[in-house]
Image (cartoon, rainbow, N blue to C red; front, side):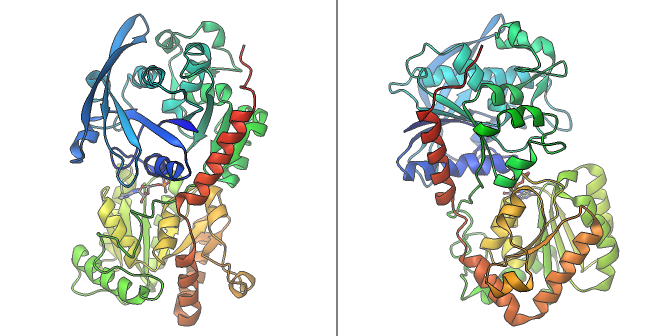
Length: 493
Ligand code: ADP
């Protein structure tokens, strides 16, 4: 099966969130199952700063963009750990910029940039020598691909038989643009209606993808249900409910070549289920040194790694810290970046409790590995969470997650109750209400369990033995691809 994967970011080339982890690992996992995968992404400035080999292919072509033409130059790289060749679409005006999508404000021309990207991806695929079966499109940045395939490239032999699968990583990001940007797409205005491309007067890239795709997936079964209702659907719940037959949830895997405590280059001592105590001790010495402490703290270490934004429940954490840090029952380490207000509030908390709260502001992938290895408990108190990767990394590193019961967290963490502990299924501590007291109570339960060495080491061993690699998820994607390929394409008029 030949798959064109269209993603706006992929590890190790460019990353702002979980999508990059998926787009970096899924192609290799699909190839191991016999798929032939071609990955296409933009040639951002970031792509060239990683010391990875990127070469010219000699292929370039012009892409229509409204009334003008824009040149796409195709570059080629290598996806480490796999035989997949990633291709990069270069156009310096669009992509040679300091960040992927903008800073505090999105780039004003993001519509134009990703119209260009979607068309260029198809123009590139259309110039290959073997037809594609599946166009796998990720998030709003690739949202126009299914529509272009059906409305503009249907007659192209390499694309005509393909089915488009749209994967949603987060409903909150929809690619909503000025209605006049329709002119840049080249689509007929007749599609600018509430059942197809329009969303309350704006052009919606994600809605377009959801309507024109032959199948839709999202990154966990629970999130697939949540987005068919408000508030999870972020306004598109009606569109998703109408297409519920075409919608599935497939939990993300983790890249176990990168996230494996046995061979992790970013931690001082590799470890497995039998050597977790020694591995974590070594990691805690390194972490203490890194944080400027004379010696590691013997108290349980509670960590949070992620974007310091409302979605991640950081407001609950700040409230909870205000009440719990004074009790001195645990040491907290927080790594992330967020709004100035949130970062300030966390710095404030750290200054109030030196030696009990450490806050590291920044995006530091290597440090994240050390934090997961050193910690006993990881917090993921999200308001909503399509899948969530940090709880999966935590499990892999024998770090017990405390999570809110939402989205993928429901599908990946089993609350420790007397029953689940007795049956050996427990893997973390789960709370329901989006409330700092509920978080505090769950963390309290985790700390009590941590004090019981036998119970805790059984829990740690169990979570480290779980398999969250991409293999199982990739098999589900293959089944989805096979199903959608066997069915007729979605009707478009
Ligand atoms: P989202 O995509 O919503 O940000 P996920 O949990 O799916 O959340 O993925 C986030 C990814 O980004 C994880 O790999 C996480 O470890 C990483 N990450 C987030 N913030 C940081 C940071 N400040 N430093 C290092 N890694 C980070």
